Amino acid sequence: MGDLPGDIQRILITPEEIEKRVKELADQISNDYRGKRLYMVGILKGAFIFMADLTRALSIPHVVDFMALSSYGKTTQSGAVRILMDLREPIENQHVLIVEDIVDTGHTLAYLQQVLKGRSPASLRTCALVRKTRARADVTLDYLGFEIPDVWVVGYGLDFADRFRTLSYVAELKPEAYASSQK
View 1 (cartoon, rainbow, N blue to C red):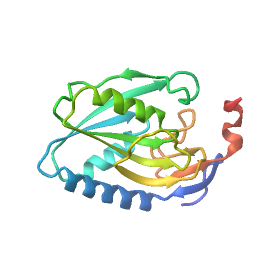
View 2 (view 1 turned 120 degrees about the vertical axis):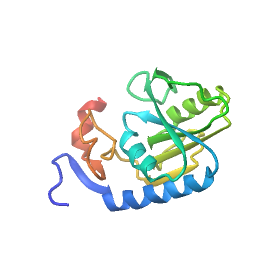
View 3 (view 1 turned 180 degrees about the vertical axis):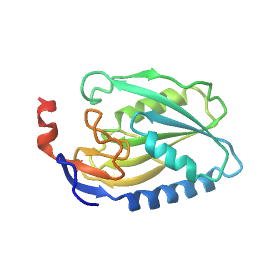
View 4 (view 1 turned 90 degrees about the vertical axis):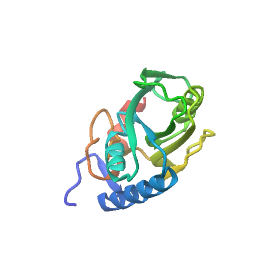
């Protein structure tokens, strides 16, 4: 893969591993939803690359929509989350799949599950590209790409200060790159 950008510590998941796992997830989702129309909800901004690749690999009818969420303050540890951009149409009686880039603490996804359950979907499942080993919230993940260590990651939709989002792999960011932002 050549030289890594200066702030990248190491590659955790290669493009080839991502491509293989996305295909496996798409096959599993297609099988689970065979005969049904799937309403996919991507969480912006991070999930857009994963969502694009996942939807292209599906073999079932599906609709794509997006939501944007924000936590109050710099972390979601308080559980205070708000919706910045909502769905374009009602999801009542639809088979909904939330697509996330990362489950860190799990608070944001747990909040979103509660909100969307209140909208009476026929079913509600979740899919995430990566989950950190420290994820603590009581959140169900029906489809998971990869478990990763509790490090700051970038690439394949994940960013640091709007940088590195379009890398074709998932990588660990060097601690010195983000140390000043955590003070």
